[in-house]
Image (cartoon, rainbow, N blue to C red; front, side, top):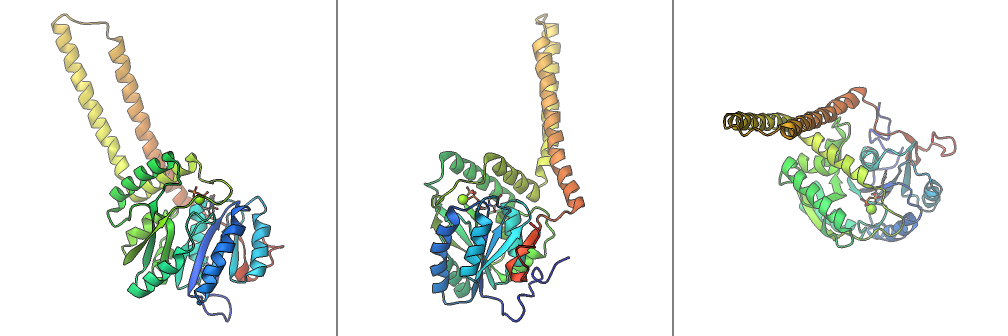
Length: 332
Ligand code: UDP
Ligand code: MG
């Protein structure tokens, strides 16, 4: 059941701020102070009411203590602490569900997304009455060739699945209006992938181009395994066509086997038979591989049905500074 904060009732007596900046933070003890130093003057300079929702995704370094200190010094910096590490997308989900603002901007904590673009996103949205403003990565020069190539393939595939309304190279640096946030909140999606769900909404949108900078400090928390996970989640969230692939592979191997059969008969008739071990073996291996592949595909979907049926929450909030609980006694 949603509590008052998740229902968006807000802090008692305080009106909702105009802007919420949602920031997933996981073991960012080096980067966070630099991010705060750059972000705060920009937000203060806007002359509007705002909050920063720092989602501590179960950090195990000095980040929690650091966030507490930032919160004391900067009341607009709100802390939402997860009981354990639940992943970047879960942190975004919590941010979207708990932000109070009329506009919600999500941004990384490592300064790869320049906070200087936030005012631009906000004024674009307000001037043109947009529900979504994507931060589009104009230049990925600081990323490794490997990251650029895999990202290129990912966005190509996603645009095939979601359609052209998905902007190329738009990650999780974006602005959402209250209407878009409420639409996302209403979706019971179990493992949402927002960079696909948001364009799927089809709400009026604009773009702000930015240069993806180098991480200021620390190292990435997105190893290859998490990238693969995100890609598999993205595909299975948006399409059942991989299941159809199984049918096509089955048909293809039937045709191949038939051709091989014809060849064998002809070779026998012409008395040109060669000991058939290799072709037999290749055929067996091929069919085995096709079957295992299709079982794996089925497994992906069955697994998703399984976890949707379990309906476990994607995260547990141990502490939210907006709820006024005592951080010392809060669940950790
Ligand atoms: N992050 C998180 N939980 C995780 C991994 C990452 O909240 O399990 C945060 C991280 O602190 C950062 C953002 O998500 O603010 C993006 O992560 P990262 O910079 O490691 O990914 P990359 O930019 O290399 O893709
Ligand atoms: Mg990063």
